[in-house]
Length: 123
Image (cartoon, rainbow, N blue to C red; front, side):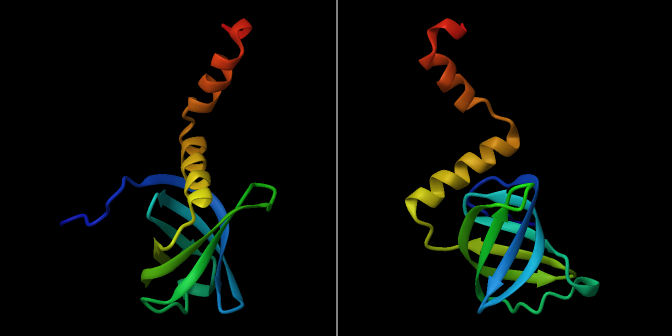
């Protein structure tokens, strides 16, 4: 099977919501990359009510329920409670935040190293 993705996918477990024309649905973000996401719907029996091509927004939430990031998206597929989203027209600030969120999820210490470099006494 040919993988059409342009960037690597990273598994995650972030709570979120999908917003579509004023309607919100709870989801779990299970897979994230710089140009897409895979979410699992919390709806009854996996019904999503989302059609392929529908424009929406994905809100990624912290463990405390605070909004971390809102990304405009389009439904690539929706079946069995799983919704594949293609991210569209992402602003540069949101791209940076998404990159940081992926790094945080992976436990990459790039920011810790940067901070350590700025504090010579920490070496």
